[in-house]
Amino acid sequence: MSVKCAFLFAGQGSQAVGMGKDFFENLDVAREMVAKASERTGINFEKLLFEENDELGQTEFTQPAILLVAVIAHRLFSDATGIKPTLTMGHSLGEFSALVASGALDAIDAVELVNLRGKLMAEACSKQEVGMLVSLGLSDEVVERICQEQRDAGLQVWAVNYNADGQIVIAGIKKDLEVLAPILKEVKAKRAMLLNMSVASHCPLLESALEPLAEKLQEMIKDEFIAPVISNVTAKPYSTKAEALELLPQQLVLPVKYKQSISNIDSEVDCYIEFGHGNVLKGLNRKATKKPHFNVSDMTSLEATIEAINELK
Image (tube, rainbow, N blue to C red; front, side, top):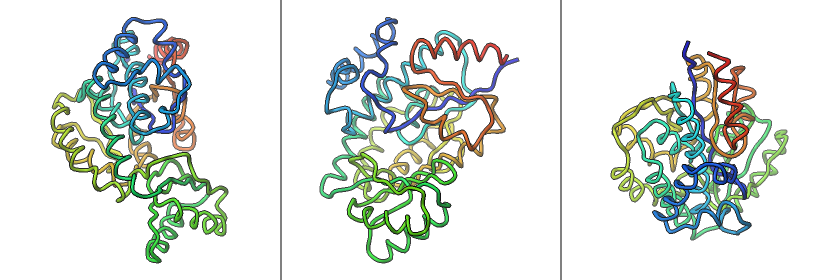
């Protein structure tokens, strides 16, 4: 019996110094991918990933670093098992790693692409102080209503990441988010906390990044999907270049429907495998699914996941 696996990839915020080092120290293919990514972008990924530095928190470096480690993890699992995904899915930035796993985007092209994406996002946000805030414990409807009321009053705040029931991330102008926090607490939010983010993702403040990103996508996306990708924008699958070219630019300025996506696909898969540093998406999935969730972030978890998948067969 073949196991139906959803391949998952986390987005920005999952980074940490040292991620991917175990792969790099143990396997030639990981070292080769790091070298190719460094050559393509001019970024010293050994230094960025494995040494203390200030750049890992800057979005133009954060995005390619997270993606590179994730696609290395996927490559190692794929080489070891030959298992192909039933579908792939990423959270925000992770959708680009999902495209690699689906065969629609070359891994090193993807590193270059999200390096550009990060630069475009930083540039779009450079003229004003922006940020993101997480709200815990409130319904989608309450958060949306409050954001709309504040926009009607002249503030720039948008609900942008639907991560799990009771967990929504809001993006906007930082001073407006600071106004929003106590309003959310007044209606019994368990938490309303600013995140350490230098950009305001998935909202209209990124409009200027749409066209240049779309041009680069046209060059790099292939019509060679081996499995559908779940769109952050629609929470539904797509599997053609034309659909990718329409949806991926929109992803910059529209909300990430992560919890809706898990709800839509859960009946179609037997398990979830998360590739890249940490277990960020496992935490989000706890409320949404009872299916097994594995991760591949280092050599130990790679071997454990291969063993666990073999037991499911």
